[in-house]
Length: 349
Image 1 (cartoon, rainbow, N blue to C red):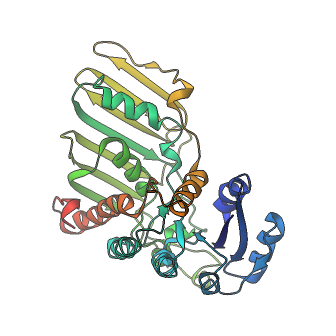
Image 2 (cartoon, helix red, strand yellow):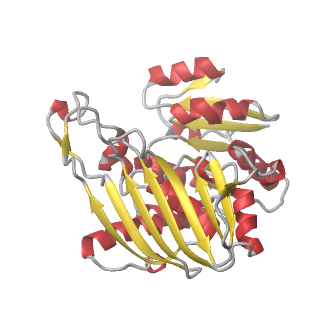
């Protein structure tokens, strides 16, 4: 039996993690520590968790807990992940990885110091369900040499000037910007990391008011609301990205990735439609076979890795802390490029 302790069981824990863990034989969530006892008691009642603790550190001292799920905002990820690893617990950490690159590197160092403890960052849903098909298509050479990539991630989540989410508060989310990290991780998995990049950032709505934040006084927004990135991937392709949370119309919002090669083109409207065109042919929808699809198996992947450790076998998950470090390098490079006006090589950071 694998016993799990939960820190910060919020929305995604309710939506995915707790229901999916309950379906896995030999797994039990035995304790939860939330920001408040009341919220912890509510989640415990709803998901049949036997104990509610008032301090997350008490989970780490428990010998009957094998793994820790960390569902807090990024501002606590480094401290909790390192503490859990040092307590010889396996660690599943909700995305995004950390506040900044320095914190991410500290998490990687702790993971390397405890190689028999599984470490995993929750993968983005953008990698599902068509990642097997996209990886196979790229590896097969059917696209030819990849020459150019465009990514658009457009929404209107940042328009409301009288409500401030935690994602707009730097003290909670650090250097993370919009969904840029989600798509950075997806690009890394499919196409590889940037060789160099140049970025521009803008915050057209510089202050907001929210009665629950800063006593209702104007609050300075330090998280960019519009981002453009240009650069070159290590595979040689040129790339352009546009991210915004300020789309005011009903037609623009959505996310789309286009990959051009010398022999073909792939266009993916995330979570919706994949289109492919051979040389000199129009884009047409692809009916991706079930054998090349993989839906959400995040919790099963983590538990399988823990079971491998218990059986003395090698373990593997995607993404682990090392893999996630790549997108944290990109996030850091975006901020540094915008601040200096220079092209940055993320791998050098």
